[in-house]
Image (cartoon, rainbow, N blue to C red):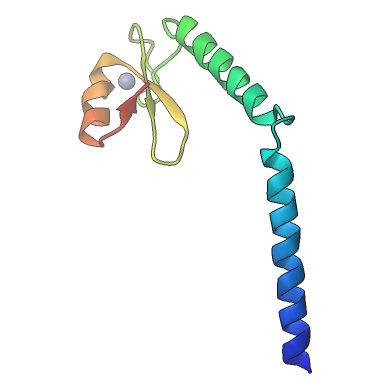
Length: 94
Ligand SMILES: [Zn+2]
């Protein structure tokens, strides 16, 4: 009896997840597109102020920074000195 109840519960959970996923993928939903625009604008702003930002690694205002994406998804701005360290860690320049 408990086993049957678990199967019913499992089917309900799968149905719930499927209906929710479909709602996000609807063509009328522009949520993903809006998020994309925002992230592009913040990225552009980060590039514009890159010359006055301190390096994320050594904290020195050492001229223009190059931005790298880390494995955990965060972005760091590194000076010329720290770029060699980033290359050794296989970080991707943005
Ligand atoms: Zn640095």
